[in-house]
Image (cartoon, rainbow, N blue to C red; front, side, top):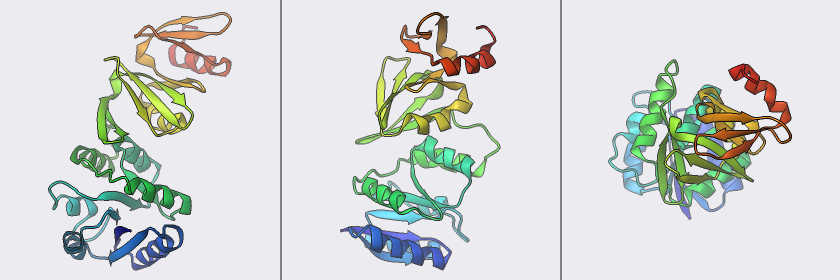
Length: 248
């Protein structure tokens, strides 16, 4: 069984999540449900849960302040939030798991499956998320967190040349010739990066516009990128390139 603690200052939200876990995730045992962050701190230390479902905004001590009470976090963490789309992008940048209220059963099951893999959060991920949630008027960070089986890699946005779709995965190609395979669709990555000077030029490719070296017209329009890689351009995306550059 995966031991879980639910932390939310709204009692109805705590009860509903506990009920959903019982219905849809029988492998989870809720060992404590807390509406006060001070109680939650004691329960986490006492019960050593495998996963904590945590609301961010709580009185007295918010979710980030609670987490700062720990050295290294030795439990999986799922934020439960009613935040807007801007904050959702912040979660995606930091590669931390989250559930949006009202919670969808399939999303809950997926979050629990990830939690079972013991992917504990990194301090840098939490710092990145905290900065963006509390300072939404500022630019997004210069790095993005890319999760892999045993942890998280932080990659500079400017060092990503292009992203390539591989079914439900996305492969990142970077300036140091490294490749990172992430369990996210290219559509998910597009939502995060398109406002950072990236463009979806093809159903398979999302490119960093700063790394475009040449555009080749004719049959099979394509781009040549800074690493020499050729990337196809879909016909319906040519107009978007024109809007960005005005040189086609």
